[in-house]
Length: 285
Image (cartoon, rainbow, N blue to C red; front, side, top):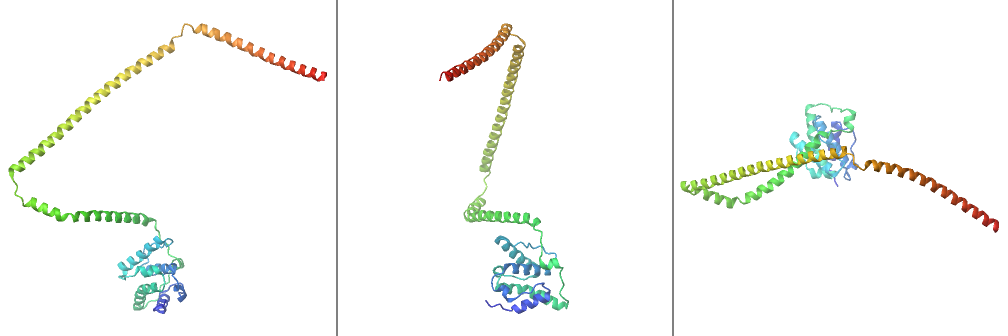
């Protein structure tokens, strides 16, 4: 692709004090990183206090970056940039970059000043704080979606304006009859009175339900108190057969101890008998 006025662009960038050398080979293929770096440098050159996000890692970030730069140049310098050509980042992007560099170059030539040398850290890479802009970006996107939906609803409502205009005009043109208006007002008043009476009945029902619930709660409290008193009485009263039960339980514990002792002895004697029989069998064999 032919690069029109490429030498002018390189000379202007060199005159403006761009720290890197730009050659023809840089724009043979799309080079978005270089284009974004040049754009950031030009924006910073035009207004040092500008706040353009420099993150171009994803496709969405690049689109947002190009739009932000184009909007900045349109509002601050009245320079209209073609965002599609800038996004191509090839030879056609040079034409758009020339629009900015030529303005800065003419301003420098008019003032007869030397190109200002930016600090080293600013000339290599500009860093912008996006933390404060993320919330604004999300809010702007949400508002854009709401505006779109509200616009669609408004469009549908405006589509019905033709029919509604006739009905509205007919209603306005129709003479107002006192008797009919009075009749309608009475109907409305009766309807409101009916709603008021219905609300009063509901309030009375609520009061009645509240009284019933309080009576049930009081009844449950009395039953709980009686049950607690009965439980305390049962815990304090000792059954009549408890003495005999404890005596028999003590005897049973003794009998169990005796049983365990005899069971162990019996097991030991059976083991000795098995050993004796095994020894006799071996002697016999």
